[in-house]
Image (cartoon, rainbow, N blue to C red):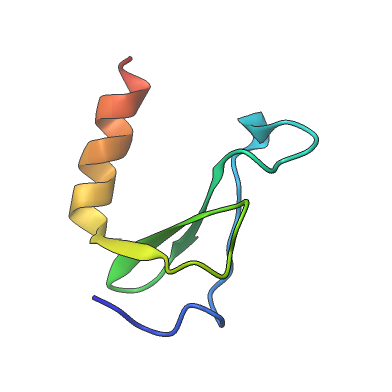
Length: 63
């Protein structure tokens, strides 16, 4: 599920704080959701299928 990530629209959670350097960034694409470290955006991102991402978000929101 890799694709070029430079053209993606990345965003961070509103809960990431004012400095915003200690969280992940997410970009939603047609086939996958891409995740990267906000402290070092030059490192490779990873991608997960949209269905898997949905399961993760549901799991995390229940905690």
